[in-house]
Amino acid sequence: DTGVSQDPRHKITKRGQNVTFRCDPISEHNRLYWYRQTLGQGPEFLTYFQNEAQLEKSRLLSDRFSAERPKGSFSTLEIQRTEQGDSAMYLCASSPRLDTQYFGPGTRLTVL
Amino acid sequence: AQSVTQLDSHVSVSEGTPVLLRCNYSSSYSPSLFWYVQHPNKGLQLLLKYTSAATLVKGINGFEAEFKKSETSFHLTKPSAHMSDAAEYFCVPGGYNKLIFGAGTRLAVHP
Image 1 (tube, rainbow over the protein chains, first blue to last red):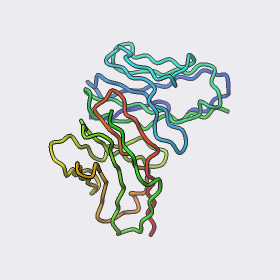
Image 2: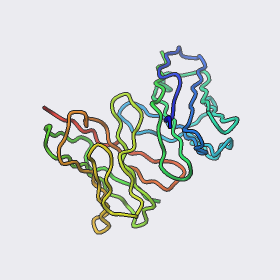
Image 3: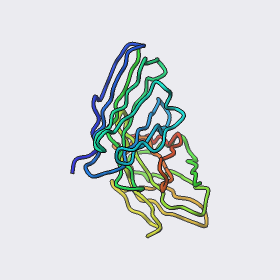
Image 4: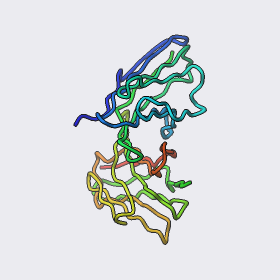
């Protein structure tokens, strides 16, 4: 059983560019979560999906952020017009139900 | 809703000595409580989970935690620290759609 995978692991971009991250959950986990973690802080919830339905979004998820899970399997998180304040580790987690969340290794975004 | 307080932002121990990371919770209703560990530049790994089936929970890498209702605590312990235990540790309430993390406790292990 493979764990949660995320791609890319690192992304460096210039301010104003768009970026997209991918998360592949553990197979058959119907819940998928996105978190953001800045230096020295704990992860902050961004959004979660149950199957393909996006059921909750944090107010941290501004209009520049969009997440999808089109077939209820992998998910993408897109950030448009990146800002330096978007620099963070973006973490994905999955769970089979309202239960333990298993995290991926994260994507570290640096916006120059 | 359940919330937790990690009482120490930093803990420093010598290799081979016991580890105690303190976590207090706010509510007598606790569907679940987790301890996660995060090594530098890595994702989070589940150490252990409390679900009311047993008050003493054993986790990976020799860690354990005891749910004490009388003290509203769920402290994480390990008898003997190893250099590889140096990391950030998070006590997190579960049973909800999202996990709410605090700032965590940074554990340093010295030779």
